[in-house]
Image 1 (cartoon, rainbow, N blue to C red):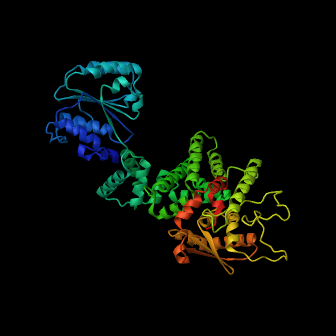
Image 2: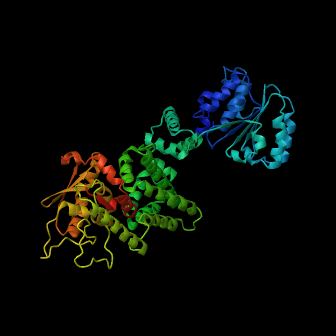
Image 3: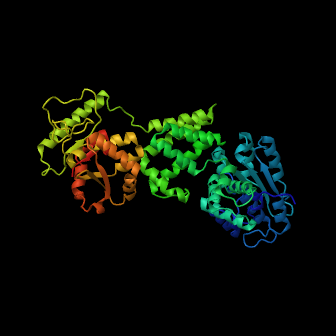
Length: 557
């Protein structure tokens, strides 16, 4: 016997064998039990979800000689003839190749002939949306007043192309994409039955690639099983021409750090291994979709278990706003990639655009921003001069900003509440580094964060969650909220700690040893939460946050 493809071998023969379409099978079986079979049905939905298969099972159930309840016996002559495609009273028509008015007129004439040995004549018209307008009009009268014991089953993947006059004369069933878990379970059942050893992660990838179509999943599995030995993730990637989640995760790392060379080098390495640039961008989008789902729901629906912690770390670094921006850029670029003459160049430009657009979208040196800065300085100065630190609930805001040309203060002018905005160490008149207080460090914290960000964005992402609380000799204590042990550990890593200590020395003029702790490890209670919330609601602080960003503001507690 000739080889039979898996999707044909495992095609359901009963309603109970249908996967993921319970809402359809339940309604149809109830109609059979109650003898309320309609004269016309429309099955719509994505490819590979069981529309034509359900139509054939319904045709068998209507004409089965030994039907058991609502299920066909699959042993009588009529059931076997339908399975073999030789049934005389079941007509399967491909509307894509029989779409004209002449074919429909011929069908209309044959419909008038009474059924022979079978109980019902069944017409299955696949891809019915391909019929011409004239053909639909010719079919309309027959659908409205069909002969007795004739059932039409129309199937389509594009229901929006069906005329409303047709839709109003049929019972419509919408076939859904089959859930990932059900496809995975069915594939596992197939592999166990045929005796093949397959890694669960490999089946997961096949299920994802099928996009909710069981027929596609079985076709992919059939192709992958041609390889010898145990079927694993790498073999599936090889067959499908995919780059894999680990490649996408690595590419996101390079984009996060803003390293153009490494990002383009990673892309080039994948292309040199035979990967399609379009496929690389598509899988990058899929990976960012998983990141978006995690950022929104804290759940990992489809990501590999060993990548989940790293994905969470990347989400923390990206932030929801940047993540949405990346996805928007890549979605727009993906549609242009399809028509690009040089797909590699287009993909490279797309990655560069992602990195470029992740930078701040305005210049802090523009006249409008400088003018607004001066206004805000005056407002903060007036606010802070009205109350002492002990009296004020909303403590003065210590604003930080990059040095700007021509921005030196007049001689003798002092702002005790606002530290110097220039990136210079604190130097006494004698030329030596003056003694620093924790308040001065806190006042320069925004400058420190900005310099760390320029050197290494990933380090900045972790450090910005901490707060300087104490100077102990040559040690600076940074405290993180409870639950941010991951950030504390990352800051304590040698490479990140050395980067921060170098910035501290360059800005503060003195070498400090960084010490990172959690609140409970530091041993001091956090400030009263109500006071903190009132401080956040202060209108001047809100204005400062809108202009500089919350990460560039420090509110003394």
